[in-house]
Length: 213
Image 1 (cartoon, rainbow, N blue to C red):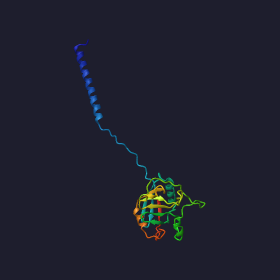
Image 2: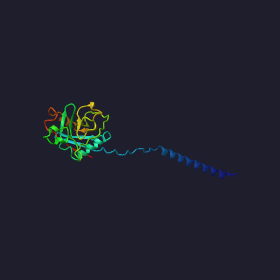
Image 3: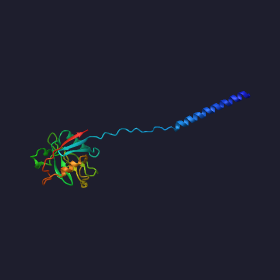
Image 4: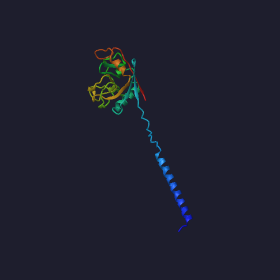
């Protein structure tokens, strides 16, 4: 059994311990009340990918590609453009309210008008390089760039057209592979040019196509 002095010391010790515990509790609560920085650092957006610049004497059109929709057509266009295939070709078919068409290597020779619209890329043996169709549900709205072809689906080569007015009757019949994002007014100027009975503009509208990575 403890004497009076021992009892007082014990009481003081218990009081000190209680005070320490209380201070610790207050400290913990204060720490919990502080704002925690929960800002999430997002990764940088993926690069936009290559784009094409179609230059004419009226100005430039900037075009983005749809590799997810038509990977082979995008690859083919970029490959031909980088090789200079399109430089010096013309927009040989223009139909107001519809589209402008170009990309035929035959149009580099102004004396071969009867062959305009029939040309395309060829392999080392001179055989035509044709692409398998990559049709999609993407609508042929104004500004869409799609691939021209012959009567059969798998006959696209190098010729393409730019839609100047919504032409949904072409959907799932021609391969959409890009879209004009800047300078579509240039196409409006070209489609309004005087033309002959074959929709060939009276003046040559030559193009150069550059790929920007």
